[in-house]
Image (cartoon, rainbow, N blue to C red; front, top):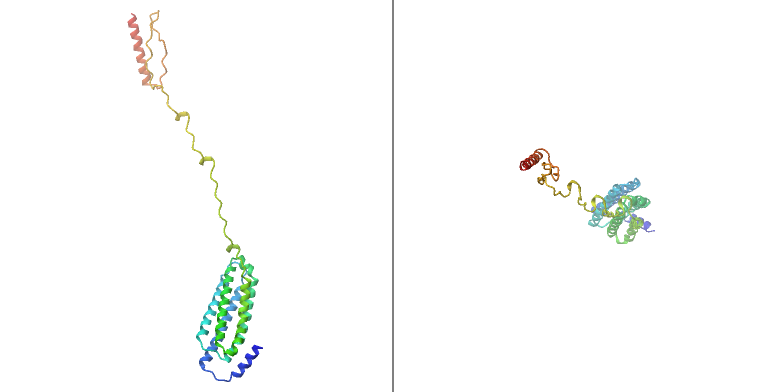
Length: 270
């Protein structure tokens, strides 16, 4: 009903001459809506071709759409008010844009599980919220530029866009990233302290063998006790000398000393 009223009012006022600046503002707004529509198509194409994994193309297309919408809002705010004829010229482009946004949002919802598995659902959720805010800002700017009698109709036209985006925001409000992008890594468990083996108690001190204590025996044995004379006139030694530890010169020295002792005993006996 309101669309019909807008169309009738537009026809009735189309014959009224308007300043060229106002006409230019109307065309700029129409061009803006077409640009937003083209970016929406690009976003929907990226969504449709997405089958998991890297979601950077979807995210990039979403950022471009938000950027164009935000810049367009500033353009509308800086422009002059729109005439009824300008408002009429926006009816069809806005309805077409609404349909494209609805399609893109539906595709986003249908692939929610894929974005979650890739750990990108949080980014999509944030992008939908930004798109909603950008679209709402543009709608408010346009409503402020149309004649007061047509403000309700302008609100109704823009409501279709924000409604579609709100549907997407609601669908992703409980999104949980999983796969490579979700969940915390488990904490590593502590390694047990060694209880034995090479890293355990101190090595025992050696108790014997070559590394033990030294003996008290002298290196070179001392002379044997002097022999006592026997009834036969030949003295006999009363004890035996310990074998020398070293051979060679030391043994010869011991032998010479023993021979001298025997010779002395014979001389005394004679």
